[in-house]
Length: 173
Length: 113
Image (tube, rainbow over the protein chains, first blue to last red):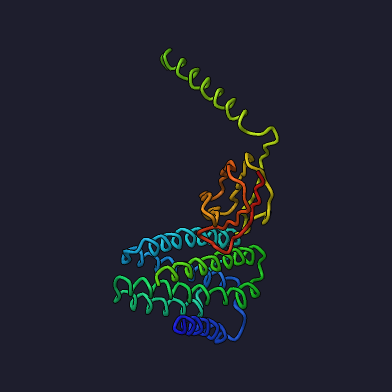
């Protein structure tokens, strides 16, 4: 529990400090980039789990992540096209991607039950961190109403996944 | 289509008619259809009343797959994105249900006998 909590706090701190480093609230093109990147990261992690895990509940969870985040990201792509917004790379996106790459590498070295536990614990922490970034930074900063609404749907999806991940984590014990 | 095909269709529709008639006998005259919508990860209405024999139409307006999963195991309905799925209620009870994929989606269905 302590480990999971501290991982969540560390992730949340990384997110917010990267955002703070910009010293201004993110613009809509940056928000779109951050949200899309957050989805891609979870899809990549899920694909790794689908390849490595032998656990039925873990694999089912990972398949849900791929399906839901691909659906959100497809919708996000359609929206930025409609709004003629070009997503813009930024420090928060870069920090997210860098941390995710390190996590993928760390998880790649694990096997079996150790991998399953590390993947699901990270999913709980990651979704918590993204929820908090959506709630405190991305949603309040979004100026376009449609983007804001998509982020609000994204928040509910992420909160749902967090609870789902917590259920799977409890099953693994 | 061969002439034989028509006979098959007639026979099949006869079967369908007779099964509807049988169903009509077993279902009370007051059987209703109730719509429950899932939109933006919210179930509306969050609390609904129905009777045994009523049909629930779950309308999934989201781009995500949802489920309507009874906590007591009575039913587990999968709702593909932008689809409507029907369920005829067979057992009474106060059923708390949720979406297995998004457990933050919760609602209650009170089914009277």
